Length: 530
Image (cartoon, rainbow, N blue to C red; front, side):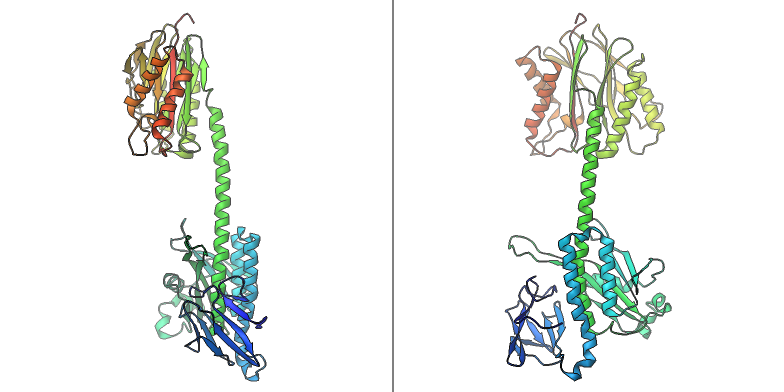
């Protein structure tokens, strides 16, 4: 590439005439100036030094063929060539790669600024096609580290041949030893001749294809941050592999320098493309979760309901955007008021789907004339037959008659309270969780309610809610909150009491992150004459 304008600055900062991204290249590493007819290289107080023909220099008059190294070994190599020297024609062909590199670096920088990284495969294809053109290689491929954090094993991503031909991972056969060595060591692997006796057995599969010459450079991602408080990024994300049957310029030192710098630039573009894709997928998932949360909220009944002889209310706070708790009310065929509250094992979408299934079952079953134990037994059988592995639910189902008779079945759920004045009893009759065991018998309990009595049902997200110190809210605090509300207002209705319970949990947790959904329901018996 032409040395212009002067002074010609070299370094990691984008404002340099030649921007290089090696690990030992300083932001403003060196510059080339003109002193009469002589080109002079000056080190700009770089951290790792500037070397000419292996010797450290501060100021050096350049001669044709001088080899310049920025840094001690992890930086970048350059070759100084006087274009008007007829003796330099033998090396000029190999240094064309450096001029090509400048164009490639500018192109990749443009990709990043324009956000073209959104199409990862296009970025990979561009990198490979350019590398093949620079090196004269016949084939090339890129492997990227797998895993969410890019710390897993190398995975084949794209292979290309001359003429922009895409090669499949089946047709592109080669040994994994060379790319894995480049990735693990962070050093470019150059194999001058695979037919060498020491190499032939190790890479027999590649040799069988006629391949003899290999260059594999690590894709080393380096992001420098000027802010002293911010952490720079320095890690390997994959490898750029090239091979050929003919030696050509693939193994020339200038070609290697060009490809290593291309690999560094490409690593940034590839990582930006991957980050863009992850961000797009995350945004899509968040939108889908938002819609799912809206659907789940729409499936739940109104937060409060009044049926003459009862009033009821419930509230739920998912620990994620969607949860596994559910509740429902229904008019029972006997003329009573049916209600249920359940808690599906697990979190997120799987639990939300199962809770919607159970809610649908109860919306049908609860409207019949069957007793609570029989309804729960049928739901258990239906859920077990679906064979959903490791998915079960606790639930409570009850029916309040107009005369105040409460019949209920508790399937492994936190025993609800029946609050009558200053006394409280627990509702424990029933059986195990639903969906886990077939043919399980379920029992049924019965309680006679007086006007003003309240049934308080809650998920374990209430009793197990934790404060910042890791202490649980517990049943005692819940009961104390209920009695405190009753002491202030003996006629407190179901919606107000639910609000007080949820508020008590919020005050106790004081913003601490919760690991479970929080759901509470209150059913108040108002008396047969209402």
